[in-house]
Length: 225
Image 1: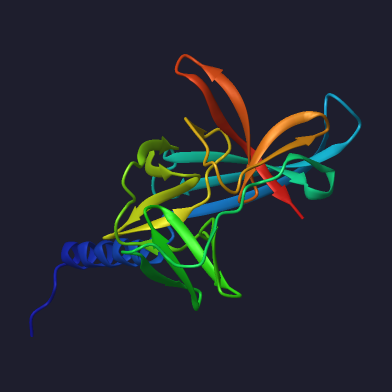
Image 2: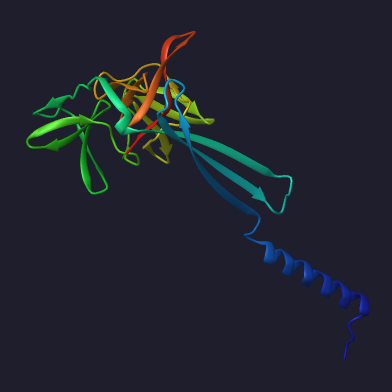
């Protein structure tokens, strides 16, 4: 019968302890904490209030204590009952879809897409609408613009933002601070909130700003029911 030397036994014990510790730590290296804070702010032009929501995403790696990343995303929500419509939106309707349209199914509902326009069918009329977030298309519309939001490439066309998901492009909501060169002619309302002028498209609010490239439009928040 062979006897294992004391040193060998000690090495085996230390190896087993290290392995057990590693297994306990597996899957616990990354921890994400999301903190959401909502404040009520008063407009500088009146005593009317709007909500401002700050979302703090805190990512911490326990295996690397110095690897700590925090992202803050601010979303301003303006109450819809404070909106005064200055210029109503133009609604584009057709009775026959243009040749070459494609049908996209999202959330068990049909949407008809052609040249960056999306239509919904109701009462024998096809109405141009903003596509819902999450809808995906195969090909980007001709004339889209490439922009970066939080270092992520987005594709913008007629008030709609897309990000690439594998071999498709998904409609997403823009972040506050995003600047675009133009807004679509249809489905945009000019409104005032507490005396301030905004432009609303699919509940996303923009304000016009003057840049070195001329007048552009910045996302400032969204309407809240």
